[in-house]
Image (tube, rainbow, N blue to C red; front, side, top):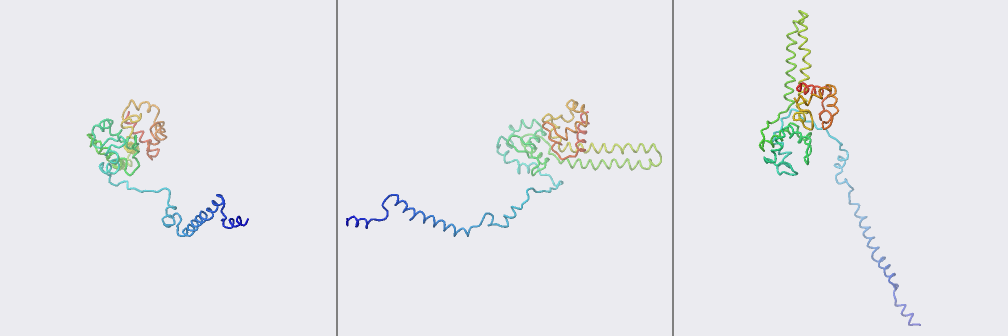
Length: 292
């Protein structure tokens, strides 16, 4: 009996595997996690929250406006075709990426050149295949046209470099009032002397708005409408084609203006421009007159 008691006196408290497992957990695992938690708590005071490192910058980014307004000089000198190509077109056309016709590759450009400048420009502005629309970007439509002409001519085309249409129309617009003012000035004394002279003087004055409307219609055509109507792209009646315009003319000018304003088929509302109803009417009238 005394031997058994002596043996139990020399035996530790851990007698089973379960007791050993709990001993390990309480002796090692829990202290380790406690130390990790203590270290994390102590060092967390030195950490800055998101955006706290650059407080001024973070505030500015949170208060930044969603949109922005950029004012450009409409009379700035146009970029050359080479400048447009190097800045915007060379990424794909210099290596033929994504099926783009490679620069100076006459074989790749030949079938495209045959479609004409208007069709090439339409593809550049509206986008085609992997090429995104280029209109409304860093360059004006005329500058994009210059880039197209530069690439096409490098592959054998003979297109003329496009000029800004607004400049020509502005000159014509300034000349029209001057021309209209001359008959009015010369007819003023005659109107005071006799009634027939007043009737003669009234005729040029009445014709002046029509001439001015024609000038405005041509300006909008040169700016927006020619892209499709010059070559009959996407089913648009070709400029000056009497047969193509005949069924539209039969509907009346008001119906055609309504279609031009609201859009139809591939033609976007107002031809993709911001022209007023009066300018749209003048442009339609201008195209109709050229098809009669």
